[in-house]
Image (cartoon, rainbow, N blue to C red; front, side, top):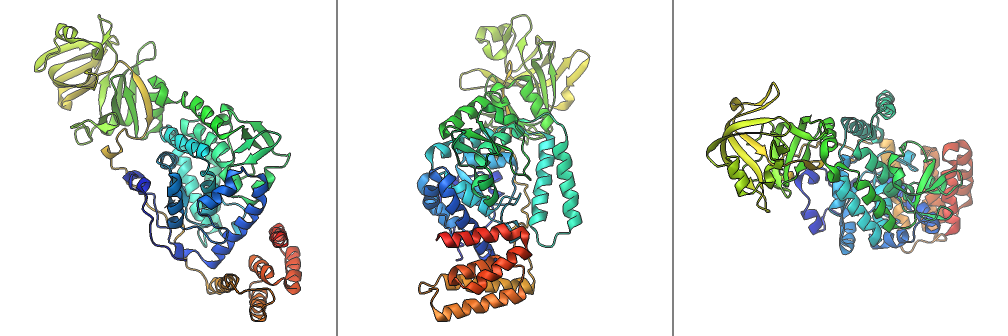
Length: 584
């Protein structure tokens, strides 16, 4: 089953370049017969069990989204069906930055890590893989209420400000996931990066917006339950795609808590089963909590706290001031008055100005390559901000194009220079004034001098919003991600090639319409394959299960019982596999 086509979907066409950079070809032909068997085992186990404990939309969603139990899904097939419910899917490069992940959701695009866990990690892997994404996330979005929650979550989450610590943590976890899933990685390498992740996890830091909203994402999208605390159903992708945790979560040992905004302050450990889970009464309530959280974010509150979050993040961010002017860049400094209001801000390096998410003509990174700085607030003596001045006020203060001017803000910041021109917003308010031969001072400090070039002053009395990323993503070159080799074809040994061939033979025999357990020719072939597995691959447990499923042969069953004793770590997987066969 090789599918190189990409189903056309206008949602994918609309994706901006900074998101498209994370997309990888699925390379369906790279999946091995063992990969396909791994998918089939997990899906058969999950569907059998989840039909009893998952939210009703899960099983329906498997059909609507084109997720097959027997075959790893292709992006082509999924997109063809997702298009009908207003979504799309792309294969991405494993772990991607949290804000990018959220932004994909805002565009109603499901990101799917196309890699698949190795057989020894069949129950769980910390790296996103196609079992987690395809079997967990994709089916549940067939519920309209939940799909809208996911989209809205992405829209809000993409604006959440992260900290420098968050990015350090992201890079470490990404590296760990790549090393763990790569063939032949030295244990010393994995141990070292695991220690780094652990140290970062244990470091006490003030939680950032992205870490808090990531907690909400974890306790809903990944590990959420719906219904009542006494009788919850599963809808979180982490539970839906994990053989072990989907069973564990239903036990009394796992505390069930009524979902609320408190979940934002409950951290989680990705490496362990969760000791508590949150239960929402329905998907609509998820939206209520999300909006409650959004009201605490800098994107809605602005002010000095919002700007301070951007400064501490050391990453590209945007402030919007009261006239609607948006300044995007790396913020480095602010000056506050005695009431903690921001009266001066600065960026360093490439900066762009925008209005309503569109770059202001002539004010991109080419003009502001060395940063941007500006005072904010009201003018001294008249208790007015410049944007609130009418023509008479402006004339009284000599705000004439082509005329020299000097004025002072209530903060004590003084501006003196030649007023060149001004730009207005859609309401007719001044939002930007250009000066040359300009000097800006505060107390004994020169904040700007004529040697710095033209002075473009943002007009506004305060900061109404602060958020991660650029106002207009086209203002910056944000395409800098290097695709990893995770999921690429690795060199496999001759022994592994031989085992894959045996898996392929069993798969081919199973897919023959004429195959029956009584078929002498097929039965003999399967027993011959079984003998090869027993002699050459004594640790393999999944292929004997598939052979027993097709033959019901007592010798194969006896061998599996012996294998359970010899390999206690996989004994429960063998028991589950046999249970599926007996229930068919």
